[in-house]
Image (cartoon, rainbow, N blue to C red; front, side, top):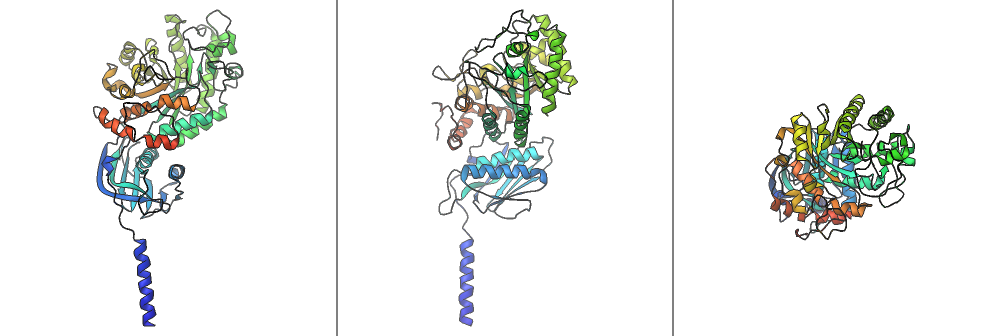
Length: 511
């Protein structure tokens, strides 16, 4: 019996020793990881956590369940790891999510990684959401030698929060229509790099893309075509609400735009009484701008706008409504000012704050309106002088529809050719010659004259949208092109894994 007992004890100890795996050794530290945007503070401890199929994701509080499930889905899709999600906190081999840090910046988060546990704490659910993207970026693309489907995450701490409140991207779905699934794919990609605003340019001369139930011809007629003459399309209000909810789960706010009084041909074709140029409008499939205008002194027009803003406001939780206001070349200046003043009051009536392109600075738009600087430094300065906030979208730097160079198959170059370095290596705090306190944030617009599907969209957006994500996240004076370039090189792993059709700039040593 004594012999059997000793043999059994030896067997148990042997099994225990097999389960106690040796610490993971990797040849790099947390400080070497290619995170974009670069975190505010990284303190490496030079060990590693082994992420594997036995790892759990725990969350504290029901409001974090969605975030835990999003992390679970992302790790499964990317690496085939189907981790269990639980509301019971684990003390080992777990990623624990909680809202447990105090910071006035609600997107602040802290990640503590040790060899047996990862703890992510945010100042809010939004902070946890940003931290989840950091964890996703930290997961090594390399398997740990000798460990079945185990991936290394280097240990240490990350403390992080954004510098700018507004870090946005815009997609023009009017000139070419993009489906719900195509838009969701872009939203997912933007979330990965901590973009928090998604501006949808819903109307233009070439198409009207949002259902307005009180004015049904806007979509049946105005939404029937696009640049080049294809069949166009539109979002029902239910589809738009689905997009809003999808983005909100990723803590991205969708901001709708109805461009006016110019860029309005699709609306005037649908309802000719809106037209202010004295001509009988026809469906338009070209790319030229500046020829259309609403009748700025027609009460029917303002009733129309009231209906449109009201229906969109009812399905859009964003506090902002973008009224456009750019390139109204067929509208007299005094009529333009009168129109913007009237429409601003309609937007306010529906409990929304005004955003408009920088031309709105000439009107008397009340604060807290936002002027989106795209072309005119003078307009940006005027807006700041009037107490408006300024959203930075200079076409010469961060218009994603600008060609990289003369060989780019997509894009235009009326503002400039914008290689990747030019999109990053500039100072947003001094570019507009306005006081820093007036800067609301940054947004990278992507106009769709020359793009028509996910492949062409991604070619122009990636990798330049990463530059905008980082410039808006990092504190003033801390961005360095050579450092960003090194981290950008490693993003090819993510691009290839996700099938992103990125522009492989010859200036980048893609890994």
